[in-house]
Length: 399
Ligand SMILES: Nc1ncnc2c1ncn2[C@@H]1O[C@H](COP(=O)(O)OP(=O)(O)OP(=O)(O)O)[C@@H](O)[C@H]1O
Ligand SMILES: [Mg+2]
Image (tube, rainbow, N blue to C red; front, top):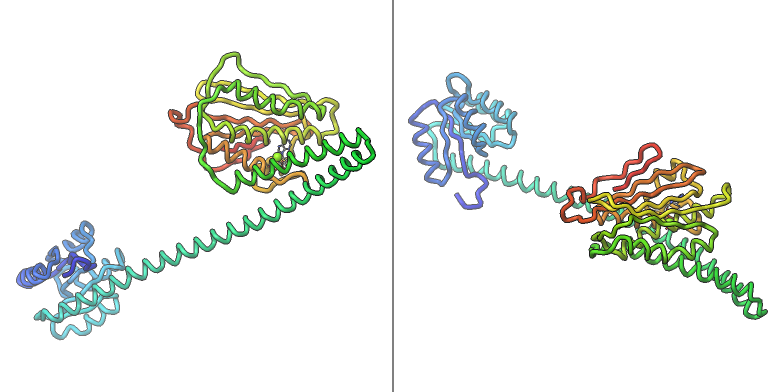
């Protein structure tokens, strides 16, 4: 027997002690571990415990005979190779055992060469079966990989299409702004110059945001946490956005707790995520023609282990379809001015921080986004992202 031999142990079943002893010695000499049983019942007990790949059994035994044993073994584990030992004139039984999936049969008195041939056959069958299993698994893996690749390619195609479409719209807007600016410069018209310049700035800002979102989407980078002062972070973000928001006629207020506390986050990424949510709130207010006054409230809360940022607007709100899809890649209700990357990216960033986003919204009344992050993720058991966002009622939880 070689080291790579698929058969290392054999169960030998015979009611005749002499035959058991002789075969036991012969098989041990060849390097096999041998288990012996004097009847079918004992054989099944050993088989349950040891699961040898090969069984060598006498056909005629008192109680359970060899064929019955063969049938039970094949039912239990069809991959077990069973070699039958027959007496002279048992040809009918030998044929029946082959019909019941026996590997081979050898006749008494046992010839060592015949035993070797039968064992060789059993070994070959086991090897071929294992190879087949490996090929099948390999084939299944290849099929899986191919379908994943196809999914990636179609997502890539969709992404390129959506982004090109978005960029085309923004460039058209930029052209328009440049045209107004240029004609304002030529005719020395200050109002036109201002109007054109504002459009150019808005379009460049949108192109910048789109490119940043694409970069976040395309290149998964691990977040780099650093301890930051939560109140200062919120105030800086507020200061960066307030002038622009107020210039659109929207009130923008922020609330922070009285005490200072630090959080461990990637400030650049987190700021991009929150900015995407704030910009959506601005769009929702601008789209709403039903109210005279619009307001966005940005709140920071300290709950002990967690920090909560909430962004609330009294804009158009969302219908059920929007609530159910708002985190999906490329989902947008904004036509040419939206790509549908913003919240997808925001959620990815929040998940990377081990946090969750909860959304509640009522059509015509407004929306609230609540972002909950662990303050100190190393010690917090809740930091592992949970499997999937599940919308319920008018709430949508992404984690
Ligand atoms: N505060 C909100 N109020 C109403 N609808 C919202 C709000 N926030 C998000 N939505 C809806 O969710 C959709 C997806 O938002 P998301 O930020 O992912 O994409 P977008 O704003 O359309 O495009 P962009 O990629 O430029 O951000 C929006 O188009 C809008 O329909
Ligand atoms: Mg957006």
